[in-house]
Length: 201
Image 1 (cartoon, one colour):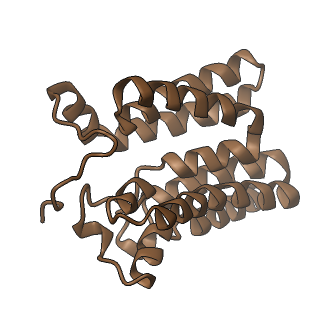
Image 2 (cartoon, helix red, strand yellow):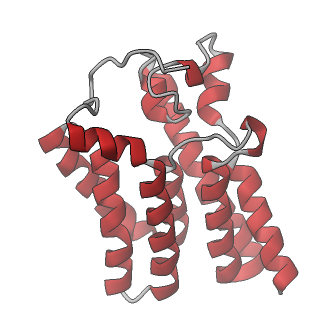
Protein backbone atom coordinates (compact mmCIF):
# COMPACT_ATOMS: atom_id res chain seq x y z
CA UNK A 1 0.00 0.00 0.00
CA UNK A 2 2.81 2.42 0.87
CA UNK A 3 4.49 1.69 -2.47
CA UNK A 4 1.24 2.33 -4.34
CA UNK A 5 0.80 5.66 -2.61
CA UNK A 6 4.41 6.60 -3.34
CA UNK A 7 3.87 5.78 -7.02
CA UNK A 8 0.71 7.90 -7.05
CA UNK A 9 2.53 10.85 -5.51
CA UNK A 10 5.45 10.64 -7.97
CA UNK A 11 3.09 10.13 -10.92
CA UNK A 12 1.16 13.23 -9.93
CA UNK A 13 4.36 15.21 -9.44
CA UNK A 14 5.69 14.35 -12.91
CA UNK A 15 2.42 15.32 -14.57
CA UNK A 16 2.16 18.50 -12.55
CA UNK A 17 5.70 19.55 -13.39
CA UNK A 18 4.94 19.93 -17.12
CA UNK A 19 5.29 23.74 -17.68
CA UNK A 20 2.57 24.25 -20.29
CA UNK A 21 2.84 28.04 -20.26
CA UNK A 22 6.55 28.02 -20.94
CA UNK A 23 6.35 25.27 -23.58
CA UNK A 24 3.39 26.70 -25.48
CA UNK A 25 4.77 30.23 -25.48
CA UNK A 26 8.14 29.13 -26.79
CA UNK A 27 6.53 26.90 -29.45
CA UNK A 28 4.50 29.90 -30.65
CA UNK A 29 7.67 31.93 -31.06
CA UNK A 30 7.05 34.05 -27.98
CA UNK A 31 9.49 35.15 -25.28
CA UNK A 32 10.61 33.19 -22.25
CA UNK A 33 7.81 33.81 -19.76
CA UNK A 34 10.32 34.04 -16.94
CA UNK A 35 11.54 37.35 -18.44
CA UNK A 36 8.07 38.84 -18.83
CA UNK A 37 5.69 40.50 -16.39
CA UNK A 38 5.64 38.66 -13.09
CA UNK A 39 8.11 36.05 -14.33
CA UNK A 40 5.51 33.39 -13.58
CA UNK A 41 4.89 30.45 -15.95
CA UNK A 42 1.10 30.44 -15.57
CA UNK A 43 -1.80 31.61 -17.73
CA UNK A 44 -2.00 35.10 -16.20
CA UNK A 45 1.53 35.86 -17.34
CA UNK A 46 0.94 34.25 -20.74
CA UNK A 47 -1.93 36.71 -21.16
CA UNK A 48 0.62 39.51 -20.93
CA UNK A 49 2.01 38.36 -24.28
CA UNK A 50 -1.27 39.52 -25.81
CA UNK A 51 -2.16 36.00 -26.98
CA UNK A 52 -5.48 35.18 -25.35
CA UNK A 53 -5.78 31.80 -27.06
CA UNK A 54 -2.37 30.80 -25.77
CA UNK A 55 -3.31 31.90 -22.27
CA UNK A 56 -6.50 29.84 -22.46
CA UNK A 57 -4.53 26.80 -23.66
CA UNK A 58 -2.08 27.24 -20.78
CA UNK A 59 -4.93 27.49 -18.30
CA UNK A 60 -6.49 24.30 -19.63
CA UNK A 61 -3.18 22.44 -19.66
CA UNK A 62 -2.31 23.44 -16.12
CA UNK A 63 -5.80 22.52 -14.95
CA UNK A 64 -6.12 19.21 -16.72
CA UNK A 65 -2.73 17.89 -15.63
CA UNK A 66 -4.11 18.03 -12.09
CA UNK A 67 -7.35 16.40 -13.13
CA UNK A 68 -5.57 13.67 -15.08
CA UNK A 69 -3.27 12.89 -12.16
CA UNK A 70 -6.23 12.50 -9.81
CA UNK A 71 -8.33 10.51 -12.26
CA UNK A 72 -5.72 7.94 -13.28
CA UNK A 73 -4.26 7.48 -9.81
CA UNK A 74 -7.76 7.10 -8.41
CA UNK A 75 -8.61 4.50 -11.02
CA UNK A 76 -5.52 2.45 -10.17
CA UNK A 77 -4.96 3.12 -6.47
CA UNK A 78 -8.32 4.28 -5.14
CA UNK A 79 -9.29 7.46 -3.31
CA UNK A 80 -6.14 7.61 -1.20
CA UNK A 81 -4.00 7.40 -4.31
CA UNK A 82 -6.08 10.12 -5.96
CA UNK A 83 -5.51 12.46 -3.02
CA UNK A 84 -1.76 11.89 -3.10
CA UNK A 85 -1.60 12.30 -6.88
CA UNK A 86 -3.44 15.59 -6.52
CA UNK A 87 -0.91 16.72 -3.93
CA UNK A 88 1.91 15.58 -6.20
CA UNK A 89 0.51 17.44 -9.22
CA UNK A 90 0.24 20.64 -7.20
CA UNK A 91 3.79 20.28 -5.88
CA UNK A 92 5.00 19.52 -9.40
CA UNK A 93 3.53 22.75 -10.73
CA UNK A 94 5.02 24.79 -7.90
CA UNK A 95 8.41 23.10 -7.97
CA UNK A 96 8.99 21.46 -11.41
CA UNK A 97 12.17 19.46 -11.62
CA UNK A 98 12.70 20.58 -15.23
CA UNK A 99 12.94 24.26 -14.25
CA UNK A 100 15.17 24.03 -11.22
CA UNK A 101 12.14 23.70 -8.94
CA UNK A 102 10.93 27.22 -9.84
CA UNK A 103 7.40 26.97 -11.18
CA UNK A 104 4.03 28.67 -11.04
CA UNK A 105 1.76 29.68 -8.20
CA UNK A 106 -0.68 26.83 -8.61
CA UNK A 107 -4.14 28.33 -9.13
CA UNK A 108 -5.02 26.47 -12.33
CA UNK A 109 -3.64 23.17 -11.05
CA UNK A 110 -5.53 23.71 -7.78
CA UNK A 111 -8.75 23.98 -9.79
CA UNK A 112 -7.83 20.92 -11.84
CA UNK A 113 -7.26 18.81 -8.74
CA UNK A 114 -10.57 20.08 -7.35
CA UNK A 115 -12.25 19.11 -10.62
CA UNK A 116 -10.93 15.57 -10.31
CA UNK A 117 -11.74 15.09 -6.63
CA UNK A 118 -14.88 17.15 -6.02
CA UNK A 119 -16.11 18.71 -9.25
CA UNK A 120 -19.33 20.26 -7.81
CA UNK A 121 -17.12 22.68 -5.87
CA UNK A 122 -15.45 24.05 -9.01
CA UNK A 123 -18.42 26.34 -9.81
CA UNK A 124 -18.25 27.68 -6.25
CA UNK A 125 -14.57 28.48 -6.70
CA UNK A 126 -15.37 30.15 -10.01
CA UNK A 127 -18.23 32.25 -8.65
CA UNK A 128 -16.12 33.50 -5.72
CA UNK A 129 -13.19 34.24 -8.05
CA UNK A 130 -15.37 36.16 -10.49
CA UNK A 131 -17.13 38.13 -7.75
CA UNK A 132 -13.88 39.27 -6.16
CA UNK A 133 -12.33 40.01 -9.57
CA UNK A 134 -15.38 42.04 -10.61
CA UNK A 135 -15.24 44.28 -7.56
CA UNK A 136 -11.45 44.56 -7.15
CA UNK A 137 -9.89 43.65 -10.55
CA UNK A 138 -7.17 41.78 -8.65
CA UNK A 139 -6.57 38.29 -10.04
CA UNK A 140 -4.35 37.32 -7.11
CA UNK A 141 -6.86 38.42 -4.48
CA UNK A 142 -9.62 36.54 -6.30
CA UNK A 143 -7.60 33.33 -6.18
CA UNK A 144 -6.67 33.81 -2.54
CA UNK A 145 -10.26 34.33 -1.42
CA UNK A 146 -11.65 31.49 -3.56
CA UNK A 147 -8.99 29.09 -2.27
CA UNK A 148 -9.77 30.06 1.32
CA UNK A 149 -13.46 29.31 0.80
CA UNK A 150 -12.86 25.90 -0.82
CA UNK A 151 -11.65 23.77 2.14
CA UNK A 152 -14.31 25.30 4.37
CA UNK A 153 -17.03 24.38 1.87
CA UNK A 154 -15.63 20.85 1.53
CA UNK A 155 -15.57 20.41 5.31
CA UNK A 156 -19.14 21.67 5.67
CA UNK A 157 -20.18 19.17 2.97
CA UNK A 158 -18.65 16.33 4.99
CA UNK A 159 -15.71 15.64 2.66
CA UNK A 160 -13.16 15.53 5.45
CA UNK A 161 -10.14 13.98 3.70
CA UNK A 162 -10.55 16.15 0.63
CA UNK A 163 -11.03 19.22 2.83
CA UNK A 164 -7.76 18.47 4.62
CA UNK A 165 -5.93 18.12 1.31
CA UNK A 166 -7.29 21.45 0.10
CA UNK A 167 -6.46 23.12 3.38
CA UNK A 168 -2.86 22.09 2.70
CA UNK A 169 -3.03 23.18 -0.94
CA UNK A 170 -4.54 26.51 0.07
CA UNK A 171 -1.75 27.10 2.59
CA UNK A 172 0.85 26.41 -0.12
CA UNK A 173 -0.99 28.59 -2.63
CA UNK A 174 -1.00 31.49 -0.15
CA UNK A 175 2.68 30.87 0.56
CA UNK A 176 3.50 31.12 -3.15
CA UNK A 177 1.50 34.36 -3.36
CA UNK A 178 3.56 36.12 -0.68
CA UNK A 179 4.82 38.82 -3.09
CA UNK A 180 1.27 39.42 -4.32
CA UNK A 181 -0.03 39.71 -0.76
CA UNK A 182 2.68 42.26 0.02
CA UNK A 183 1.78 44.28 -3.08
CA UNK A 184 -1.91 44.08 -2.22
CA UNK A 185 -1.12 45.51 1.21
CA UNK A 186 0.95 48.33 -0.26
CA UNK A 187 -1.48 49.01 -3.12
CA UNK A 188 1.03 48.22 -5.85
CA UNK A 189 -0.44 44.94 -7.13
CA UNK A 190 -1.25 44.99 -10.83
CA UNK A 191 -4.90 44.82 -11.78
CA UNK A 192 -6.54 42.68 -14.46
CA UNK A 193 -6.03 44.31 -17.85
CA UNK A 194 -3.02 46.38 -16.85
CA UNK A 195 0.30 45.93 -18.61
CA UNK A 196 3.17 44.87 -16.38
CA UNK A 197 6.83 45.89 -16.68
CA UNK A 198 9.46 43.25 -17.45
CA UNK A 199 10.36 40.93 -14.61
CA UNK A 200 13.33 41.90 -12.50
CA UNK A 201 16.47 39.89 -13.31
